Amino acid sequence: MSRLRLSGISRSFGAIQALDGVSLELAPGEVMGLMGDNGAGKSTLVKIIAGNYRPSKGEIRIDDKPVEFHRPIDAQRAGIEIVHQNLALCDHLTAASNVFLGREPMKRFGPIRVIDYDTMRSTSAGLFARLKSETRPRDVVRRMSGGQRQAVAIARTLLSEARIVLLDEPTAAISVRQVAEVLDLIRNLRDHGISVILISHRMPDVFAVADTIAVLRRGNLVAAKRAADSSPEEVTGLITGAIEYA
Ligand SMILES: Nc1ncnc2c1ncn2[C@@H]1O[C@H](COP(=O)(O)OP(=O)(O)O)[C@@H](O)[C@H]1O
Ligand SMILES: [Mg+2]
Image 1 (tube, rainbow, N blue to C red):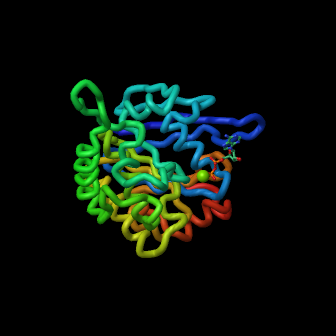
Image 2: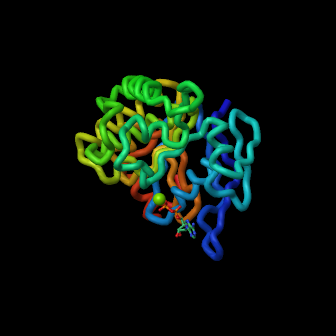
Image 3: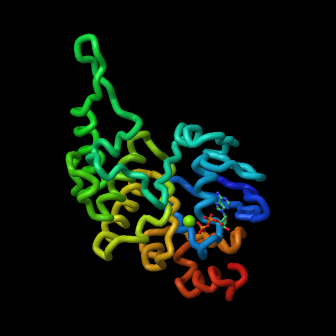
């Protein structure tokens, strides 16, 4: 059984064909590295899976059942969470507040309802522990490293029992040591049976964690294979077009 199956997904923006008939399958607990040059269609593909964009053509199946996402909340309800390229965190808020942003738990205080900060702190502490991250709930995002920011964004995806997590360039702008932290976060998601699509330009990161590798070139899927059956050289060739198809 596949957790996610895309069949013939196409999407155009005016005259630009961003995706052209992409078909992919993702198993439970599989980490897929999604690679391709700038403009290849990577972000568009994960945004379609996350309900940000609608496909012009094609079908999405979750656990072998066809789904149609009109808005991001539809995809969230199906267990899909996305961490966008820009992370979309609030710099002046704490880690706990960012984890719960827009989903704050409330408690009764006499006749009024107030935000339940205790629950936010204890739940997010539990999520950071589960991710083996040293981030503390009261830390303010502004003072965090890039790796910790990713931990906050990923902890957010775990609030809602995500079964598919989409990561758009999580290691693009962080130091080598922080990259190791983020790769550990991804292994943690996998160990909890969560399927992951990791978009990255960094070949070593992808080969370090991915079970499978998919390559997009100008909106076309030119490879989807086991990482063990490929190599950085082959993937580079597929990205540039030196290798047509694999
Ligand atoms: N909202 C949009 N409006 C118009 N064109 C877009 C939009 N989003 C993406 N595109 C175009 O679609 C193509 C694929 O973009 P994108 O999915 O962002 O690629 P990648 O993430 O691989 O760099 C590009 O030509 C890009 O300019
Ligand atoms: Mg992109």
